[in-house]
Image 1: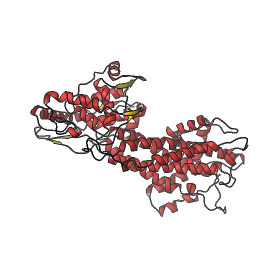
Image 2 (image 1 turned 180 degrees about the vertical axis):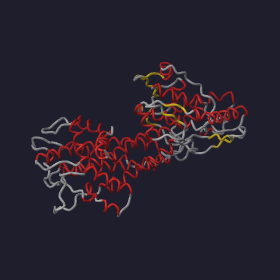
Image 3 (image 1 turned 45 degrees about the vertical axis):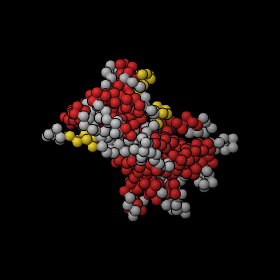
Image 4 (image 1 turned 135 degrees about the vertical axis):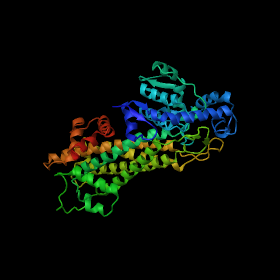
Length: 516
């Protein structure tokens, strides 16, 4: 791939994915340098002349009224980074740290944060060299920004903390030396600019949203395959029905289902006396369409935030008269927009899991599916348990999601001696969304496995062929997992299909034939 050029204004979620997951190199747009240099000169002037400016010539949080002299400004920034690196919990995966580095660099590139260009460039150097700071997952309140995680992200930049390099965990200074990068001495405002922002929330959130876009379509495919396995009807997906309730993404979902099922000979004929299916089959467009709404909202919020200036204070300099400087202390670091979007997404992903788990229950229960399929999808029930416990796992994950779906943003806890008296808990919302995402990918994978097993039984009865899209999904599954004609060690099989879901392979296989 060509290097990604960042300017602070045009970053997309797919760009974050390319850099975080595929190792795309990143370069700074030279057009941003005048603005970056203007704000840096303004900071230097404020320090030189002893003006009162939060975090530049004062302490932080409750210490906002403590004046800091010019000769203490470097120590102030160093102390800030060290003291704020108080995160706890497991280290973030490499791709999440890469997303954070990119998000922070892009914000600083707009030129309102008062950092030197070398600070932005060194973040990109670390990213391009594969230096990944060890960032604990817990410790952010989502305001004022992601302070603890970003402090850990910053430590290797100054030659401290820990970082992964070439797969090995080492001291931050050692990682920089191994990559032949010179650590920086942070100057006035620079430590605060690196720490005070939403890079944890927005970086991790961007990766979750990309997975959600993929999962929403994959869940549609799973539902369609289950519909065929259960000898259901696609009449509820009739376009005329959805035009009468014109939610755009409900209509899109119904259209996609019809395309995926086109040509199927496994559906129940219109002449059947059984005129309608259970809700988790009949109402897929209505529920999955609403999920698509939440995903689209999250994408909208995250792509705004990726290209926002979200630290504090902000430096405004007149482009004509650079002596006209205004420092504004405000609250762009507050993660409420992300917190609410992620909580909404958590609910939507939980609903995908709820729908999928109920469809699995239909597949494995002969009493529910009218005997279309054998109990627990095995011909030797009693001696064999078939998909009995695979369904248990799906049910356990769906139930755990319901606990995680509690809105993190409904909570707040005062900090910094009540100066920071309302926080977003957006970092918690993002972490919970990522957990729900992984659970739901697994539930959908179990459904795909069970549906493919059901389809094989239907085919063994000589009952016709799959739809054009569902056939593509079925064939991909069968290239990775066989029909289970006896009890198998299930966990690795579930993980194989979960990987196909996570990587978007199921979605791409179907889109290739539906859109081709």
